[in-house]
Amino acid sequence: MHERRFNPDNLERLDNPERRRTIPPEQVLKLLPIEGSDVILDVGAGTGYFTIPAAQMTGGTVYALDVEPRMLELLRNRVEEQGLSNIESKEGPLEAIPMPDGSVDHVIASIVLHEAEPYTQGLAEIGRVLKKGGHLLCLEWEHKVTESGPPPSHRIPSEQMEESLKEAGFELVSRQDPSDALYLMIARKI
Image (cartoon, rainbow, N blue to C red; front, side, top):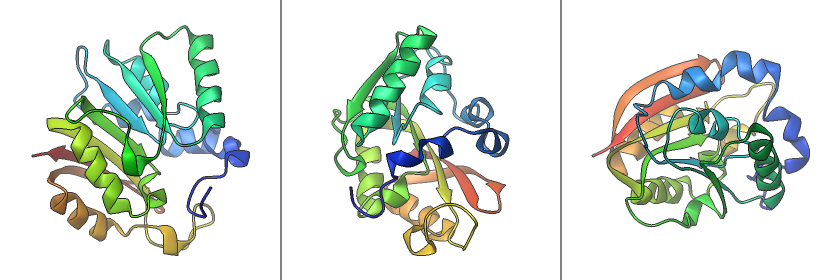
């Protein structure tokens, strides 16, 4: 595990009441135009914070990608407990997503792009697997000192992220700041 990757020993940080108040997954996912049998990829899926509610919003497959096998095992257990049949877990890095070109309608990248080395490679991979017109939900740490989260040197300033999205072939659809420490962008692949 390199220094930017989330330590799975800190799993309680991924799903707790404070996070659910700040970033309610069901409400956040409504920002994506999910419909019918859309295929969704949750990169850095962790224990399924966004994966599980996304699977309840589509009849299509939701792929849960994570580099950490322990996270995927926990996610599989949660999926089984909830009786969901449209989630498929995939182990692999964001910098080399093990999926074919143009295979998904939406990508969720929640607090994970700052872990990619470089994050622009992560954006390129997201662009590769997204269908033209597909959407990216990008939630990231703002570049500042906060009580929690990675050090500022690992964070991506929101202005830089906007520019990188454009360079990667996306157009910004909307932007929100769910807290002083986080920004949320919806971008469409053009």
